[in-house]
Length: 313
Image (cartoon, rainbow, N blue to C red; front, side):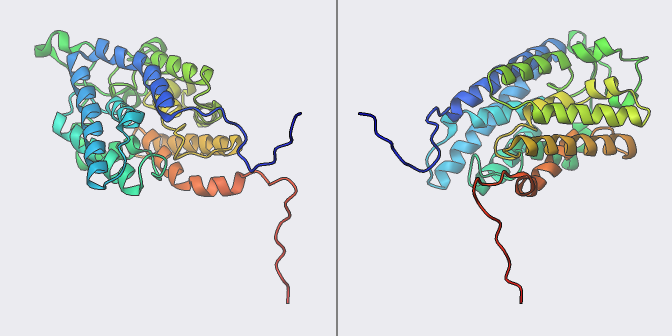
């Protein structure tokens, strides 16, 4: 005989472990990492290893000092380290990368309670702290394949500084044949990783599509080349891997759309009107701060619930 069981939500028992989600994110970042090694050589491997190992070590030590259960097994520290590395120039000294890892794991993540409790994306915040603290080291770019003949290494501007297809064609930007951070140059690799995450249902495409679409639309209205703006800088890296962070972005689809639109607007404003050529990191951090308010404004109304009526005197 079938029984009617009444119980509180949630009723869906198809849980996905954090480690599985993080493993899928790592797999999605593999194409970008491989292309960074192809374009920037062994230093890409070294810098990525430094970020990952230091992030895991800081998380282990922090949880130990706080006498809390270890969480290094959920792979979130590995993901933070890898994403941080993808946001750094290949010439960055390893000790600066370690400082970034400390900021990401200890300051932004663990001091706020650990995974799921942080108010901002750890890798994004760490990158911004490093940019403010070490501006010269964080804006020193080299062109791809410089490692094949280091004596002829040429420091060059990123596509956003040049802002012209005369030096970087659309194909160059799509394939990553330009200066920039380790993981942000090859749009093709990032797009492949983003599509993988969407197919695996790890991320919702609402925020990335809203982000990229808003930036492209505003760029076109302002007279900029929308395709050039979308393919340049950290748009794809930010849209697919940082504007979709579970803990620091809205839960509802409406909220994700608002979040993506906000990121697109802020990125456009900084790029078009600001003195700094890139605005992806700042836009995501600012929208992370606004996430609780977005959640409040876009939350679904509980079925059958009535709005509280204020007593009028």
